[in-house]
Length: 90
Image (tube, rainbow, N blue to C red):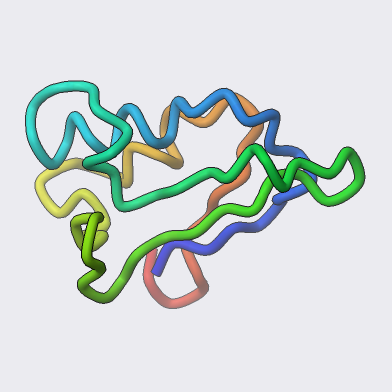
């Protein structure tokens, strides 16, 4: 399982949302991402609220950990290393 290891490091760049949507639908569309970064709750000390959907949501696809990739794309492309794999899932 992907966990949010350093939410305070998140700058709200949305790269994670973009690469996630590309994985799911083959194009960049943050509305089709398994990750949602809520910048309206941005707090300099805690970072924005980040949600990863592991269960079906009305609007978002379920995170499949980028099962066809070598590693989850959000982890690979996040410039701030906000995400990590939970122990035992690597």
